[in-house]
Length: 361
Image 1 (cartoon, rainbow, N blue to C red):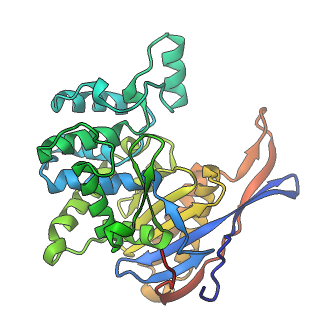
Image 2: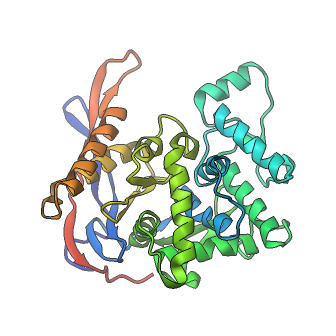
């Protein structure tokens, strides 16, 4: 391992109760530029992580590559949904309903259980009015619909569309491998909670994939993939509330046209900065999603503090974004009566350099 790498993780965020530390969340961070250089890290940037919902923007790329998504504004809303992890809001569900109708897909074709939405308000409304659960409320409904739509575009059977060997899933793996500059056969493959393939790769490769979503190379064989990346990410920025849901970390970040962001799942999160051509991936070892907003804000502040030589325009954006995240996700911890009982504090310290991590899959 290189100097400064901590294989077991580095302290990322701590919880304070009163004036004493209650718990510490350790993890790993990788900051990579679109050229593939590891520029900053904490913990072990070569740590193998499951992508979870961070795969969804990449999984939407084949839809554009195969001409499923056109250039109209209506297609923007569909792409934003299919690139995220939905909460089951009225806006999200109604658009997914229209997608099913548009492509002649029956809700029963989704290889998902019927559930109530993750969105608390919507879930309570449905339960109190004794409305039934639906497959369309599942957080992974968008990813499943994308696979079914792609299957039709490829002219292949929809049977077994969640299997890793299915042509639609193979297309997703090819896009992930291309953006992460990794051999497809070296991707870790297992089953996700939603039944689709779960993909694993080194953390720094996830950061690289997002850097290339934000700053795609438009030359040669990568031109079509670059155009697809611009199409999908532009849709995400135009409709941030569709990607995950209002009030979520991704919605806050995607409201800035300079940012691409994934959905939080099992403590893994990825985002990228277009202007700076940087991708960032974070993994909280214990899967605590609550620690991620503060970690993201601290990373942005660290990047802003080191951007002086590159010009103030490279520092001001991350600094404003960090302030927006801190405003939307206060560090104070409150009890049931709204009284402050503690706080969360960022502990992560990034090491900076310019090198490739010398790790093996």
